[in-house]
Amino acid sequence: MHHTAAPPVPARLAGRDMLCFSHDWTGDPLSKTHLMRLLARNNRVLWVNSIGYRSPSLGSKRDLGRIVTKLKAAAEPIREVEPNLFVFSPLVIPSWGSAALRRLNTRLLRWQVRQAMRKLRFRRPVNWVFNPAAGILAGRLGEERVVYYCVDEYTAFKGVDTAALAAVERELIGKADLVVASAEKLVTTKKAPHAPTILVRHGVDFDHFATTLKPGTPVPAEVSALPRPVIGYFGLIADDWVDVTLLVRVARSFPTGSLVMLGKVTMDVSALAREPNVHILGRKPYADLPGYCKGFDAAVIPFPVTEVTLNANPLKAREYLAAGLPVVSTDIPEVRVLPQCRIGRSHDEFVSELREALKTPGPQATVSASVHGEGWDARLAEVERHLVPLLSTPAPQPV
Image (cartoon, rainbow, N blue to C red; front, side, top):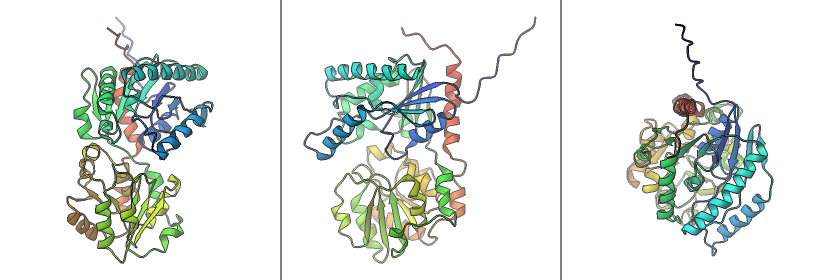
C-alpha cells in the first residue's frame, strides 16, 4: 500500500493575516515593533495602537494631552505605514475599573477592529496580544490562534487597577494557544494551563546598533565635546525605570566626567538636573542612537529593583552591547544572564563596577560581536517553531 509522505511543515509564517495589540506605533521601537516588521515581510499585519491599561487622571495635563491625541488619531483612516503593515487607532473609554465599562469597551473595540479587518479583507488572523488589556477581545475576532506575548508585569505598574487587569490577563492566558514570556520570572507567573508557555528573551536590532563601530558614523555635537568619561543612558526616564538617587551618586562619583540621559522624561528629575555634569537631552530619533552610543564611554541600566524590573528584560542591555559598550546595571535577573554586563548590587558596588568598566572605555568590536547571534530574526524563529505546528492542526473547539 502506497503512503504519501506528509508535506513538511513550513518553518516560517507566510501568507497569513496578523493582528497586533500593542503600544502606539509612533513610540520607540520595542520588541513588538521589531517582530511585526519581520512578520510583515511575508504576512499582512494590522497593528492596533494602544488601548491603554491604566485609567488616566483628569487632573494630569499629560493624561489629558494623551486623550486629545488619541481622539485625533481615532479620526484618521487605517494607514499603511510600511509595506504590509497597517496601523489603526481605535476609540476606547480610558477606564477598565468597572465590569460595565469593560463590557462597553469590549463591544466598542470589537466593532471597530472587525470593521478595520473587513476593510482590509483580513481572514482568520493570528492575534498577537502584547497589551494584556486587549485580552477582553481575545477569541472574539474570528482568530485562528491567540498568542499572548508577555514582556512585562503590567499589574505592577503605577496607576493600574491591578485586580481588574489581573482578571483580564488570567482570562487571556486561559484563551491563549501559545504564551510567550520574555523573562524567566514571567514564564512561572504566566504559565498557561492548556497551552505551551515558552521563554523567548529579547533580541537586538544588531545591524543598526553595530553601526556605532563604523568610522563614518558621526557623534552628535551635543555629546562629542563633553568632558570624559561620558556615561550614557537611553530609554524612558520614568519612576518605574530610573533610580534618580543612584544616578546622582554616579554623577558625583565622576565629577570631571559627564552623565548623559536620553529619552522622554515622565518623572521628577530636578535632583538630577541640579548636578552640573548631568545632561538631560530629551528623546532622540531611533536612527541617531548609534551616533550617541559612539560618544559614550560606558552605558548604564539604573533600574530601581522592584516587582516591575524583576520581571523586565531591558532591550537596552543588548542594544548597548551591540554598540560595543561596557554595560553596568543594577541587579536585574535578565541582565544577570548576560555575562558581558557588570552588576552593581548596591550603589557603592554600582559605582565601583563603573570604574572597572571605564578601564576599557567606548565601543569595542569584541563586545559587539558577543550578541551577533541574538537578532530579532532568531527570536522570531524560536516563536515560529512553536506556533507553526499549532497552525497546521485544527483549532480546539470551544466547550
